[in-house]
Length: 247
Ligand code: CA
Image (cartoon, rainbow, N blue to C red; front, side):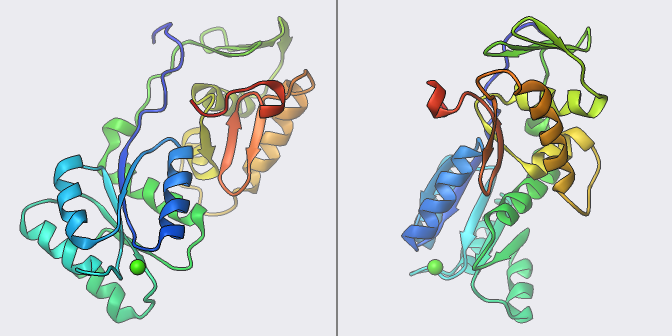
């Protein structure tokens, strides 16, 4: 426990290898918004060089590239002793190709057209397995943002100096949002950190608890809990209130 303010979300470095500019841009923007450090490239040969240079924690690797395909890139990396986790992006849905991809040494795959939340989920699942030390975060004992303050030791929340009573789950959810204030957290990340077990079903429980929290925290002005459509939630001032959503 320390008293320093919440650190920026510890970034995992991701490399996106995709030759379709619109998909590459979408992935880069979303992953950055979620707090990852992102680099990108568009050919198999350049992917081999960038993996060496950047040592990413995970590579999102398109299978159909203009030069080497993603399977060949993976084979060459593995042959060179590089075990960087690889998530294939594949337009191929045949069982044969899935098997080929996993046999080539990939960790998982997502079929195009993909749902971006599913991509985030797969990335998080792989990183949980492969990079646990970076995923772990140290929470300071007092978290604050704007006029909102949460004291973990005393288990108390105040906004504008006024005490706010929260249930244990609401408290944990708010602590997680505050620890990542200014960043966007996905529903999957929230499930992982607040509910603390592999939740096979329904992320609607999060929407329910966010609604409870808003009734208590955001009955004050301005609202602090923002919905980021298609991605998750962020505790920050909205642009309308002079906030600086991204640094
Ligand atoms: Ca492609």
